[in-house]
Image 1 (cartoon, rainbow, N blue to C red):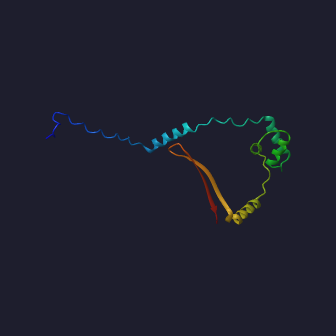
Image 2 (image 1 turned 90 degrees about the vertical axis):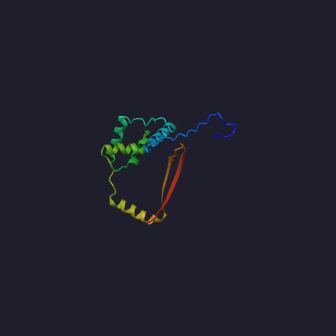
Image 3 (image 1 turned 135 degrees about the vertical axis):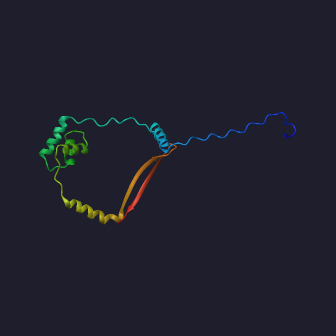
Length: 150
């Protein structure tokens, strides 16, 4: 029975249920997040290093052949004195590709390094600095330090 004053009025429709978001596969969510990160953190490609000329490559190989006991740094220094701008790593890469490597010091260097590490183990620290991007596209930085003891 309807109360006084409600005769003939239609009843209000029930409130619609709030729509529930569809269940998503976690891989889908990760893919969406990776796309967001790519869009936010875009950088133009780096131009890279200029190529090494054949003349400079031949000069590096000739220096390595004429002076077999020189290391990569010594050869790099000589090239710098001659006015060539090149990195030590490039000199090392070219000499290794040509099969020219200075003689190794043998097992004594490895043994000395092992003894040094054992003697200094109580004072060594291992560190790492890294970043991670959150789901809200904020970048968090972390510095991790661990004491190394045997």
